Length: 295
Image (cartoon, rainbow, N blue to C red; front, side, top):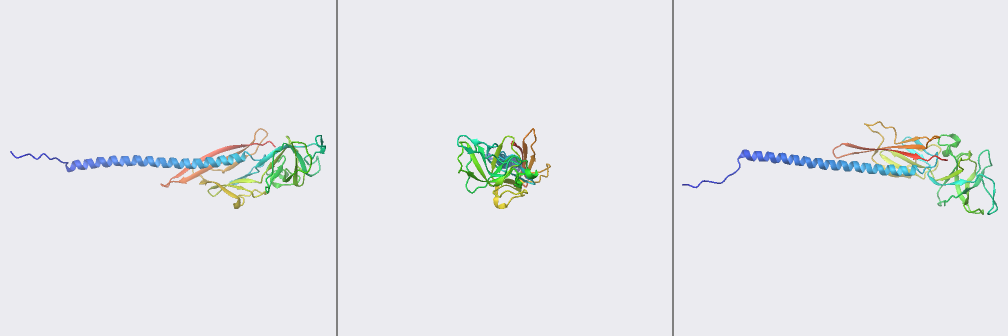
């Protein structure tokens, strides 16, 4: 008998079914890996925005905590303050120091003593940096308080420019005699007899989509918004001042201190980046900074 042909093969219908099944599996697999990669990219984007925001908040938080009492003012998307350099108790009595036989130089206050350009403080622990500008501050009332506003630099007033440490007079250990640039009187005594040394003003401003730090621009009676651009340092980018989904007030807010609490600065930083698909991805950081207010 003739030999039978035992060779087999796929029919066209079987091939079509196999191709369709393989296509379905490939499509599901591709979609799975695509969603996984997209999710990773989105998560990484959010993490980058959040990390940038946390660094910005931490930088602003640390500096604001070191603001001199009653020196914070806010205008628009800018916040300004006087950075604290040192503090000490000041001499408020006209006495003779037994250790050296030297007459004291009490801090001059309106209605209590005549103007003077030198006065004594205790345990200052401060060494001025050459070329730097410092201010001496006693019991400021705060911005907008007229003669008590430290930024007005009035005489009498709470602020005067520091000139040098007087080293030509023999004084007991722990006593330092400060010298101002001009004869001055402060408005009133500090309840705790505290004197503060500050540096020149510092501002944080949101300009466009950037958070900038300004320094070294000098004391100004009216808050500069923003200060001169030559003094700007970039802290963060992609920050927003308009949010279409959540009501927006301002990047900075300030609640003035009262008799029962310190001042509080509110930070509302919102960051946004558009991904490759054209989606807007938002990260919002809301933070409160308690500012010491013990003048």
